[in-house]
Amino acid sequence: MITNTRKIQEILNKFNLSINIKEFPNSTKTSSDAAKVIGCNISQIAKSIIFRGVKTNNPYLVIASGSKRINEKKIEEIVKEKIEKANAEFVKKETGFGIGGVAPFGHIKKIQTFIDKDLFKYKEIWAAAGTSNSVFKINPKKLLKITEGKIVDIS
Image (tube, rainbow, N blue to C red):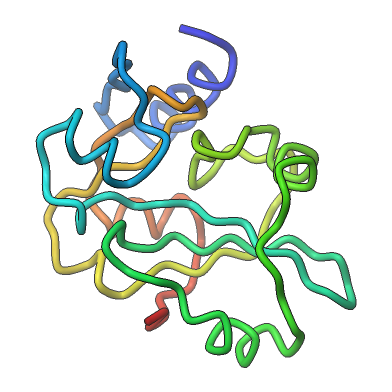
């Protein structure tokens, strides 16, 4: 298990969650790749997308259902500034993870987090575990507790 994945496993353990990270030979980088490899509905994939505040340069994390398109205007209303999707360099600098493997927690620093309300329709969802081929299954309410995120309608 490589460092990023180990970090995510340690956080899950700290919250007394008996969740094991699964690593696959195939990529789980995109929502559709992950759903295929895992064998779940694409809506159960919790994709972690980093946005950058245009004025403040603050990172914002949106954890969205894999089947949803994020309405950036809704996020802008909440954070009170224009945002743009972050580039790979910004994502790595702010989270410690590469695009396609950004975990919903365990970042270099605390990032304001928004979680798609649609993920709460499911008992279990799947999220990246720090690499482009590792994932873990979690209850959305437990994910909310770990991330201290805010539930939002992102679509």
